[in-house]
Length: 147
Image (cartoon, rainbow, N blue to C red; front, side):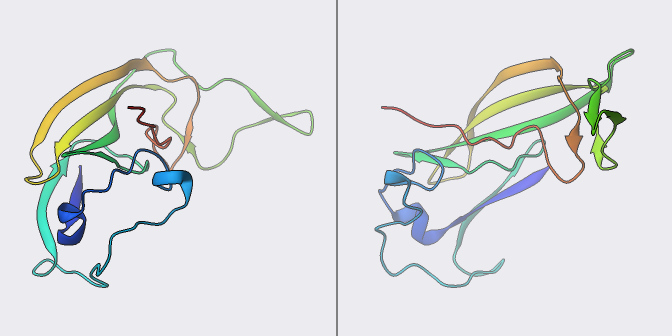
């Protein structure tokens, strides 16, 4: 379980952030006077627990924040990563994990002003195709919003 924090300045901003690196893929915001630091007691509008794990960028559209998450399920008998080869030899990366489990890949909509989870939908649930790096998740790609 991870926590989502929202800076007060972002909560007040009306700018949409529909994709990785934001509007126009520039990685910048037109918002002014943003705080340069925050803590548990300062510049935080709300804090919400999010199930699972994810590395994707949040998307913002209007009053909603969209997130992806990967929720680990039970081991699945017989499931394993496909065979990989390196220089013609069988290869298993030493940091690869979890190809033998069921996963639920979900999208969540969070209210931008309150932090309340508005809805969750499962985009995929089942056996994953391949292992993942132990420091990564299956919810790494950032979605994109199109109006």
